Image 1 (cartoon, protein in one colour):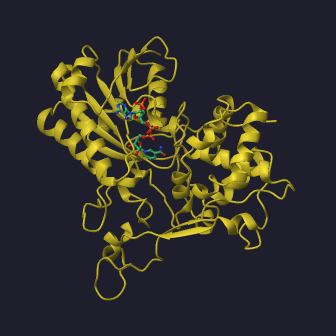
Image 2 (cartoon, rainbow, N blue to C red; image 1 turned 180 degrees about the horizontal axis):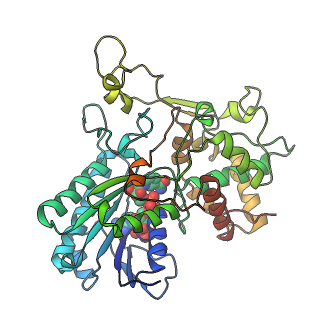
Image 3 (spheres, rainbow, N blue to C red; image 1 turned 30 degrees about the vertical axis):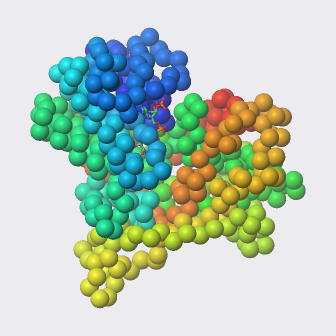
Amino acid sequence: MSSENTAIVVGATGILGREIVKELAKDFKKVHALSRSKKDDCPSNVEHNFIDLTSSAEEMANTLKGVEAEYIFFAAYLQKDSEQENWDVNGDMLLNYLKSLELTGAVKHVKRIILVTGCKQYGVHLGQVKNPMLESDPWLRDTSLYPPNFYYRQQDILREFCEKSHPEISWVVTYPNDVIGFANGNFMNLASGLALYVAVSKELDSDSKGIVWPGGEAFYTKFDTFTSSKLHAAFCKWAALTPGTANQAFNVVNDDVASWQDLWPRVAKRFGTKVREDQFSDSVGVGVKWKSETELPNPPPIALLAGEIGLRSGGGDDKKVNVPGSKLEQRVNLTKWSQEKEVKEAWDRLAEREGLQKDAFEKATWGFLDFILGRNFDVVASMSKAKRFGWVSPPSIDTWQALDEVFGELEEAKVLPARK
Ligand SMILES: NC(=O)c1ccc[n+]([C@@H]2O[C@H](COP(=O)([O-])OP(=O)(O)OC[C@H]3O[C@@H](n4cnc5c(N)ncnc54)[C@H](OP(=O)(O)O)[C@@H]3O)[C@@H](O)[C@H]2O)c1
């Protein structure tokens, strides 16, 4: 059923933004999709507007005259080399975009702004977190211990904009984790990197012994929570339109807790291969040649709560905590593996034979995958708060199904060989 609702999605071509556009287009009267590039064909109720969020508020206001709506979804992200640059650039992009709404006058139409961030909120990139992660957990604001986190700056900017300058506008923030999704021409994506690794490993597995888990041995049996980009989009729409969710932040993850011990054999089977029975044995050459391990230097985020939850080690120092040291471990370090001559040649052969997008392999963000699969601690986000506010997860979305679907989309886009 169509509604009179209107929306602006900023970062409309991204893994998360693209699905928000698709979800809103189902029943919103009008959706403005904003980004630097245009990648998808849009239905008639979606209008694409080119925008560079790194330009000034005045420049943006000139480009965005007449672009008005009641609900704004901010899912833009520009990856920089350091956390300080991420803080500066991603914070400024939001700040200047909000200022541009004031300059065009569009601000008077806005009812709610939804900001997309993620579970780096809890420091999942810095070391062991307290599990499950709750929205009320402390922020890692002490910059003598932790790098700056641009999500904090963005949330501060949004709150100040709404609560101080525009109290009639409410806000919602989402914290997705390990997103499973698809975006045209964007390979910073767990599913595409993983599937490319499987496809090339299978190509190299001439004696059909099976494939080897590239992540850490510890993480293989730990628990993770993933976010289907489709589920996240449905959540954003619900959170925008539900009066009671005003001025709240929510974890947004699938309704299941997943583990690679369950997913990895299913991934292998889906691509017509199997997991090597002895994948963690030192006699498996592939896992010895590209093995790596890095200590995470900061105190693990759980240290902030160590005293309160009874995990402080002796000596009364808040930062000393009774948990194993946090590390990133790779059985097959994909950053190194992907640079090997034999690996690149195997991809070229496969891409040629199957008519695939040649640049898919070099565009894959192997470092991102090394991180996602390499942690040696559980990463479980609680959905209890969202459920208390009335969120009901679509029953059709679970983690395996989300992965399977995205693999299908990647096959269709000729990033992966067609399923035989
Ligand atoms: N991907 C994950 O696994 C994941 C997990 C948890 C949280 N998150 C968070 O979710 C948020 C969205 O990330 P994502 O992964 O969806 O990002 P993404 O796929 O890289 O998409 C980023 C979007 O921002 C747009 N954009 C970037 N720079 C821009 C600029 N200067 N002007 C206008 N638009 C610009 C891009 O469009 P154009 O390039 O066309 O301009 C694209 O639409 C981020 O805060 C991210 O940290 C992501």
